[in-house]
Amino acid sequence: MPKLLGVLESQKQLGGASYPPTLERLTELTGDTLAVTSKALTTKEAKARVLLSRAAGGKKKKQPAPSATLVLLAEDLEAIAQSDRLLEVQLQSARTADARAVDLAQLPKGLVSPLGRAFKAALEQRIAESRLPRTIGALTGKKPLFFFLEDALLPAAAAPARPAATAADGAARHTVSDGAARRSALDGPGSSAQSSAGSSAQSSPGAPAISFADRFDAAFSSLDRASGRLNYVTLHALRAALPDIPRETFDNELGALRRQRRYSLDPSDGRHHQMAEAEREAGIMEAGNLLVYVARRDDA
Image (cartoon, rainbow, N blue to C red; front, side, top):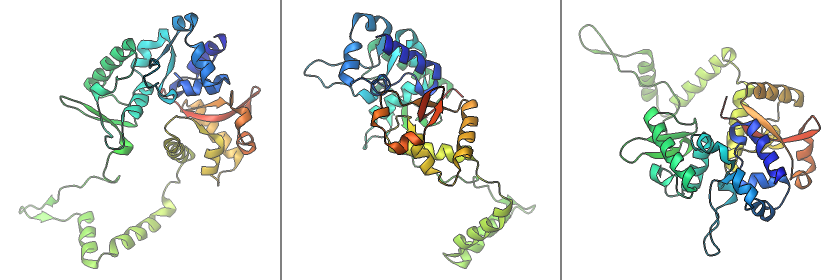
């Protein structure tokens, strides 16, 4: 139990997506098996200090998934109920391949009663204040629906279409972009792509280079989605995704992102012996700890 509390306190200090950890992640950090960790959490001492977001079912009931069960200090119940972390975990657990958007009333299902009530109230407050994480959208109304933006069909990122300018005599006057579109339509199907490519080529010398931060954000998001949205991506995978960036530059730029509280690094506690040599070599040694996992913070 002291080890569990120590891990929870350390994750709380990291903040953001590191706390509260899932039961699966807590097991990795302690280095124990899931059975040992779960049993420790059922002791009288644990129940007085620690809360599981989902209660264990009986022998005949389906047990909650360790990857969808958060482990938090009981004193943090209200704060976690209002956190982006809980909303993302619950939405990930509730959505299905056929139903990507989830009704507000469905999101608290499976949570222990005190946390479920506080979470439902927090969701209603979010809708009232139009306050959501950057990764989630919502449709308001009698039955609000929550969804991940990546599941929504959105228009391409581009400037919104402007109404045609009007001349003094009331006739529509084409703008420069309107004229380009008309020429594209007149020139044929291939002309639009050629024009776009030409325009891009002409503007590229003066166009700003994509920053390390933008490339790192994109790589992390892609790898995190592929691994089930656990918000833990190895440094090895991120270095492989940005192969053109020298290690020293990568580490310096990542250090800047950490100072800006955008990302945090975690050691390989509990999984070090399972990691491949390449994954260990990709890590960063700090204060005697080999940091190998990257987590995105949501408290920047």
